[in-house]
Length: 305
Image (cartoon, rainbow, N blue to C red):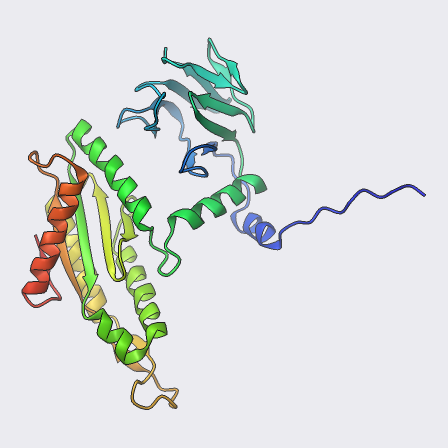
């Protein structure tokens, strides 16, 4: 009797993920090395540069990667890559390239010690990489980005702003009297408040803005290409939307009732813009924090610059 091949075990969550996203023809790279392994770089049409310069479309700030390392040509017939005279060369499937090379699905591209894998579609493998990577950069309690990702994003935004001269603003906010919420309604209710206020904040932002949780009830927003006046307007929208939104929480007095009570969560917000005098992204973040604490001293539920 012929031996049957082993049955493959497929994660039902992965299958559900694939069905949800479906397939796409947009090519991308997935980072396969270093502390940010799993990060995905989607490729738009046209010419794109890979390198360490802030204006590179695929910016990889790693030792051994040249400032202008390689160039991609993304067109209807596929994606080609060519080396730009980098100090350590560009390899495709460990073979050094000396001319423009057409990439195939699954090709490994090496820039010094940095390894990228090329994908042409949303394969199951690619989606699983995305799923795993998202778990490393997202705060599980709120759905906002975690502190590490937020700080990394701010560093890159700072470098781009310094190179381009474009404005960069930061919003820092803190939920007012949040300890009282936990003490009065319980920690489960506090988690609900965190989740709902995060959704409210995100709804008032643009898709390029980055919202991250940097502490228990402390959040930071990075807004590239945004002058301070526009950032203040966004901050005020967030403050007003949170203060007006009725969050239903369990009755702290009569715990047996199913009728919830309404809680309105206010926030104190600080806004800062990158100035020529600031020598690092940390100084910009500290300026936003100082403005935040100014809002607290003035009575909370307000925006300070």
